[in-house]
Length: 184
Image 1 (cartoon, rainbow, N blue to C red):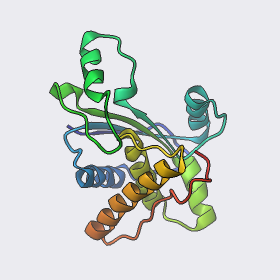
Image 2: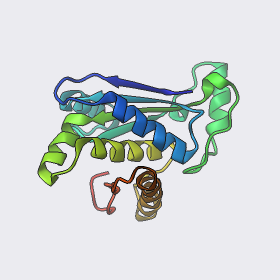
Image 3: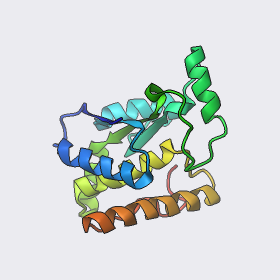
Image 4: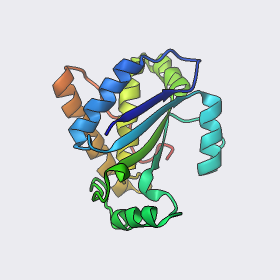
């Protein structure tokens, strides 16, 4: 199984090969290599549209995640997958029924939004994209940050993922998830 990486924006140059390697490493750290994952890079205008449509927030953002298992059942095959996903807890991997159903979902990266943050904070774009991708994958795995407890759990998971990533790469990335009072 693999990663589908699409760059649907032209505002910010993205080194797709590097991002793909980083996404593959994150998948390896989490033990989800057998699951498909979509990563779509978009500009502020498109991210704002998506955020408004699905979250009723008419602003751009850095990352939005759409888990496969939250899709509405339209066919018996999908219904059987949803039964498998029904009792998922954060971080628990779904059981596999058929190989073509091993899909975590899609992550939309607001690369223009991330680039602006990087300029303001003197950060490396590709490091920041790796961090927001890790955050997005956590959401695909059921982690949320609506409450202080959920926020703490997600921060612990992101910290673990990035510490392993740093250990394997020699980088020094830190989670963007810092405290529960930030925009959710």
